[in-house]
Amino acid sequence: MPHTPEKLQDARPPERRIVSTGQGSGPGPGLGEKGETLAAEYLAAEGYRILHRRYRFGRGDVDIIARQGKTLVFVEVKTRASGTYGGPEEAVTPEKIRRIRRIASAYLAGRRLSDCDCRIDVVGVTFEGGRPVLRHTRDIYA
Image 1 (cartoon, rainbow, N blue to C red):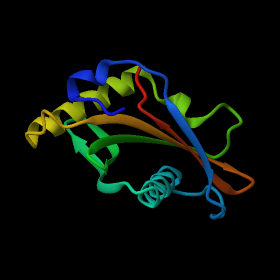
Image 2: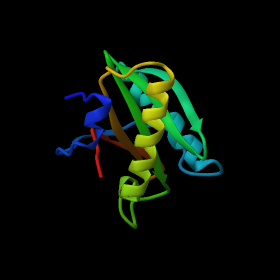
Image 3: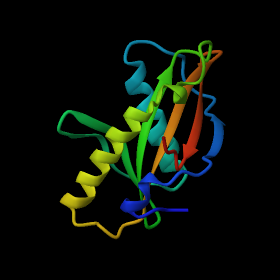
Image 4: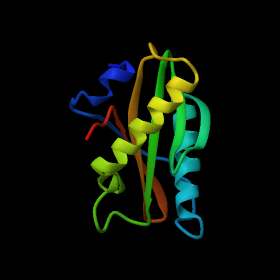
C-alpha cells in the first residue's frame, strides 16, 4: 500500500520478490554501479518508470527514484559479490533509511508533491555462480 510522505514513518511487513536475471559474468570493478544498473533494468521491466539515478541532495543520495503507477518509489540498491556474509539488504541500516526519508521529503517538497503516494524499497543484488540475483523488498521501514 502506498504512503503519503507523512506516513513514511509507518512500519509494516515488507513484500519481497527474488529474481535471477541469468545474465552477467559476475562482479568486477564498479560492482555497486553494476548492481544499480541491474536494479534499474529490473524495475523498468516490472513496469516502473525510472525518473532519476543517483539523485543527490546535500550530503546524501538515493540510488533510484522511480514511479510505479501513481506511487513515487525511492530505491536503495545494495550489491555484494556473494551472499557469504548475509544479504546485501541487511546493510541498509536505520540511519540509512532516515537519510533516504530526509532526501525523499526534500525531493517531494521541491516539486510540490506533498500529497503524492510514496514508499521506500530496497533492491539487493548478489552474484551466485557468477549470475546476479536480485531481491526486491518493497515498503521497507526502519
